[in-house]
Image (cartoon, one colour):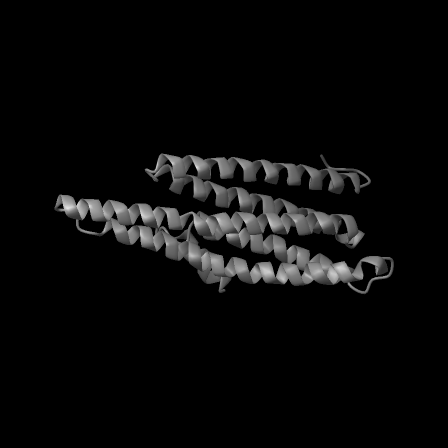
Length: 208
C-alpha cells in the first residue's frame, strides 16, 4: 500500500476511499505498534518466560496487517458496487424494482468489510492489552497507543456499518445488525477500559 497515494485519494472529493478504509488504516497502525513492542521485547532479559507468546503476538499482528490491507480494498469495492446500482435505469416499474433489489443486496454486502475491520481492530486491542501486561516496560505506552488506535478503528468501522444499515429496508435484518453493533461496541468499551486501567496503573505518574 502506498500511504501517500492513499492519503491523497482520501483527501479528494471522491467518496472512496472513505471512513471504512481509513479505519482499517488506523487499525494497521495500532497493529504495527504491537509488532514494534513485540520486537522490543523479543530476546530481552527479564522477559524470558514470555518469549514464546511474544513471538506469537508478532505473528498475529503481521497477519492482521495483511488482512486489514485486503479489507481496505474490499471496503472500496463494496461502496463501488452500491454506486453502480445508483446508475441503473429506473424508467419503468420493472427497472425500479430491479434497481431497488440490487441496491439492497449491495448494501447488505457493504456492511461486511467494515464489520470485519471492527472485529480485527478488536483483535489488535487484545494484543495491545496483552503487551501492556507482558511486553517491554519501556514501551508500555506504545502498547497503550495500539489499544487506543484499535478502539478508534473499530468504532469508526462500526459507524460505517451503521450508515449502511440505515438504508436497508428489511426491518428484521436491520434490527439484528443494529443489535450486533451495540453488542460489539459494548465489548470494545469494556476492553478499552480494562486496558487503560492496566496501562495507567503501570505508570509512576498517570497523566490523567
